[in-house]
Length: 165
Image 1 (cartoon, rainbow, N blue to C red):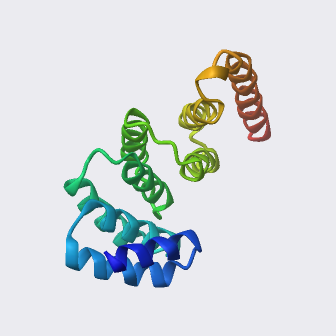
Image 2 (image 1 turned 90 degrees about the vertical axis):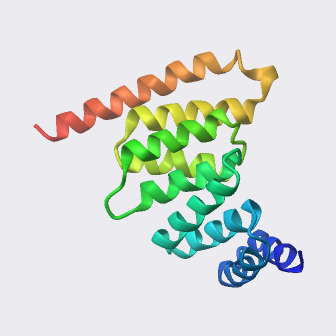
C-alpha cells in the first residue's frame, strides 16, 4: 500500500520516473488493476509505449471495468509509430461506455484523433468530452455547439481538399 500511495503522489506531481518505480513495486507486490493502470500511465507519459500497452493490457485483464484503463490504452494505440486506428476506436468506445470522466485523457484523445486526421472519431470524442464537461443540466445547450463543431470539421476538410488540388 505504501508504494501505491507514494506512486499516486508522484503521478499527481507528474514525476513519472519515480511513479513508474513505485507502481512497479506495487504491481509486483499486489498484482491489482490499480497498480498496473498507474504503471501504464507513467510508462505512457515517459514515452514507453510498448511497455505501457503491455501493462495496460494486464490492468485490463485484472479489471476490465476501469474506464481510465481503456482511455489510456486508446492514447497508446494512437501514439504508436503506426497507429492502430480501429483498435483505438474500439477502446475509445469502451472507455465511453464505461463512463470515462478524466478530462485530461478525453482532451488528448480528441487532440490525437484530430492530428491524425481522424475527423469522425475526433468529433465523437469531442462531443463526449463536452457532455462530460457540461454535466446533465446543460446537455440540451450542447445541441447547437455540436452543429457548429460539425460545420467547422466540414469546413476544415474542404479547405484541406482545396489545398491538395
